[in-house]
Image (cartoon, rainbow over all chains, first blue to last red; front, side, top):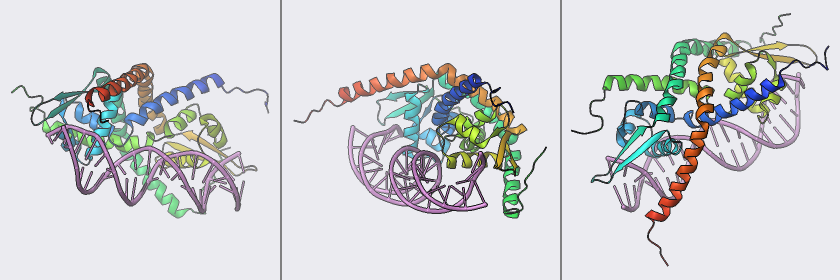
Length: 142
Length: 142
DNA sequence: CTGGATCCACAGGGATACTG
DNA sequence: CAGTATCCCTGTGGATCCAG
């Protein structure tokens, strides 16, 4: 074989690897348990703290606060405090935050479109697991 | 009534909330620590186990195996086993898996484009945190 | 109302050694 | 080469109480 001939584009590979790191950075932020849903709640316009909490429903104060702080830290949301009695805080997506919604919608689409397929694949896989602990197919398309 | 958002369409909100759940389902899979990078490694075509491992570089066998199994379970990759000596296993993106790359590229773009902005926002936030801490905490015991 | 602080349970994930 | 099994540590995230 061509041992000396490595036709694999190394440069492109490392490039893609770098890109993956960048994306992973982002996904570490928006891919956590709550961020996406919070962003979704914010996508309609400025919302108050407890409004978000009710909207997401299931999130704890702690997680909501942490998530919002993370988003604020990354410049994705703006936090506006009104020193009234009782206090009131509005959260609003920044321009950057709104731009994030665009690629997020692409995932929305993919998720909704292929969700049935994925769920079907999971069940299919479960069946195979049960059946073939030893019957596993050793396919070799030569 | 100069309130922020009393006119929020509730129906649309709950609809969006549902969508968010779907997306979160997906992000729980592709948003974990390694899946994206593994998919990236697979995007060039069929790759062998240790090839991926070298490509991702930093992933443990355990995590690579788990990630691949998860992807296979969701029907995003195909696992092909060649019962040769030594054994050889190829992993390849399915049609569904390749379709995922499309919305993923959108995130690629967003991430790469706005990464500097985000990093800058983080540093800015860190500075504000420091200042705010000394500004707020006017109390100096001792 | 809007958080901060603390305690605690659990899963994610790394390192290592072993198998086929 | 391609995994599996085990141990163990850390972070995530929930519940609860406290404060401005």
